Length: 424
Image (cartoon, rainbow, N blue to C red; front, side, top):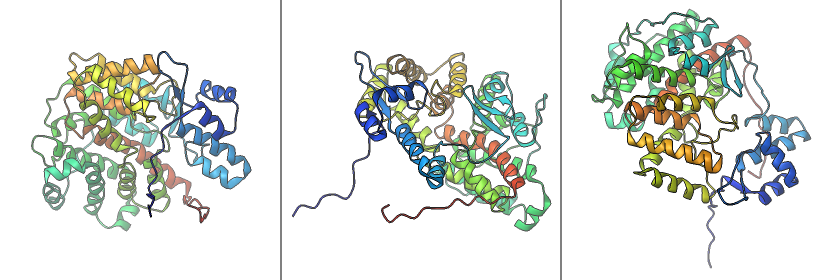
C-alpha cells in the first residue's frame, strides 16, 4: 500500500486570470477593474498579454466579500489589511507614504530630520526644529556583564531575539514593575531602550560585543561607532533617513502586539519586547535577510535578473517588491533609492540590485518596497550583515512607544474573539 504524504505543496503566490476570477466568482472585466484601482497587484512579462495576479490580494477581496454575511466575517476581514479597527492620531497611511502627526515621513527624511526629532514628534505631537541629543542612559554593571557574555557568533545570528531580551533586561535594572508603572516616566524608559538597542549593534562590529552608547552623540552617530564604521555626514544622513522612514506604519504586527500588551497594563519595556518578538519572523525582519542573501547569490546584473525571472516564472513572489498598501510604488523606497543613487560611490552589489529594480519596473511593472531599499542603503554604507533588520527594529521603537502611550489613554483592553471551527 502506498501512503500519500500529509504535507501539501506550498501554494503559488500568483494566480492566473481564470483561477482568480473563479475564486472570486467574478467576470474578467471586474478583475481588471480591481487591478486598475490598485486592489489587486499583477504583472506580465514582455511579449505576452498573459498576466498573473497576487493570491494574497485575491484572498483579501474574497474575505471582504464574505464579510457582507455578518459581523464575524467583517471582523475576520479587518484583521488582514481590511477596514480600520483601532482609532489613532499617530500615523496615517497615504498614497505619499506614512504621515506622522500630519507630516509626511518622506518630507521629513528629505529635509534631513533626525530620528530623535521624529521620535519626539510621534510621542508628544511637538516638533523640535533644533537637533536633539538624548541624555545617555547608563546600564547597570550587572546588565553590562550579562550582555557582554553573549557569544558574538550567537548574537549575529539571533540579534533580533537578543534585542527583545535587552528590552526586558533593561527593565529589570530600573526596579520593581509596580514602581515603574507608578512613576509615570515612559519617555525615560523609551530613550533607555533605544540606547540599549544601539549597544547591541556592537555585536555586528569588529569587537563582536555589546558597546554601551555614550552621551553627547546622536543616534546615527552612535550606531556607526557601535558597528565600527567611520562617522561621516553622508552616512549619518542616510541612517537617519532609514530610521525616520521606518519609524511607524500604523498597525503592523509588532505595533498591534505592543498595543495589546499596553492594553493589558504591561510596562513600556515589556510592550517593546512583545513588539520585537512579533516582528522577528519570516514575514517582517527575516525579509531583510532573505533579500540580502538573494542579491548576494548573483555576481552580476544579468545573473541577478535571470534569477528573479526564474522565481517569478515559478509563480512565487520576490519579497522586496509590490507593497499592497502602495500599488503605485512604496514612497519610502523611492526616497531611499534616490539617496543611494546620489551617493559618491556605490559597491558592485548595489549597482547590480539597482539594475534589477530598473529591469523589473520596466518589464513587469513591479515596484520596490522599503525592505529592498533599506538593504541597498546599508550595503552602500558598507554596514555589516544583519544591520537592515536590526535598524528596522530600532526605528520602529519610536512608533511602538507612541502607540503604547495612546493605547493606555484609551483605557480599553484589546481582546478579540475567536470563532471556533472543528475544520481547521
